[in-house]
Length: 251
Image (cartoon, rainbow, N blue to C red; front, side, top):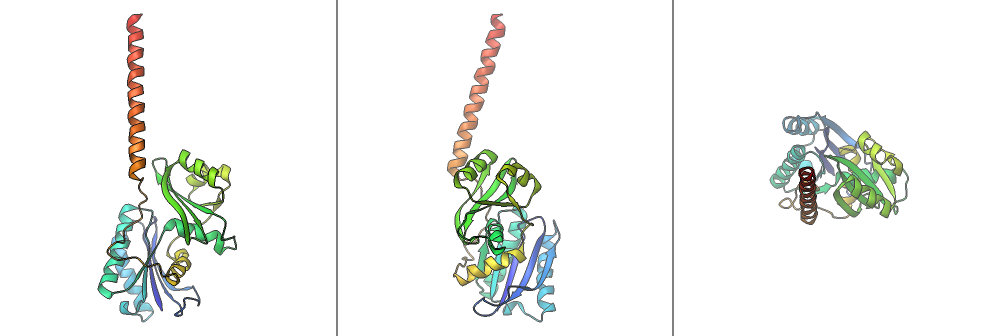
């Protein structure tokens, strides 16, 4: 069986072609991999797929499963990867396996010999002082929750839940240094392959019509709560300034 795995979630992307036996229990080494340069996903992705298939005398129709790292990550990059996978799947009637980038990160310690039952927290920088946080067990297969959090919310949850923490980016490692995070290399299509195979064996397929990028936006309740807090802070600030002005006038 041939698996074609797409990753356009990070700064650098990639496309991977892998061949496994019908049970998915054979070698998980990819046949070949093509890296996609930053900011060139839309122009390089389809030619990279064509090159991979041509070099291995494989047709697109021969691919049995399409897989994609569905985010979180770059808005534009995710759209490119998801659009390609959905287009191929609809044209060829092939199943799709979508995996979270955070789940792939959380699978690394277990694949390196860690205990599958211990919660693993994967953390990515989301910009503007916020972080993508996913908590998993069973090498990325059991999701305990994913969310986009402020640094205060993240630290509070890590303190409450406990477990192992993994991160790749220096700013994230620095913010969490007192939690002793494990630094791992950035993940991509190659690191996603074991989780893709386990998801396929478990029958975890994505409907092509419902598949969307995993942006991990804040929930509506969180947005309303933060807006309300912001309004309270602005109101308090205005009152404080008004009181200060009155005091000056009184003098």
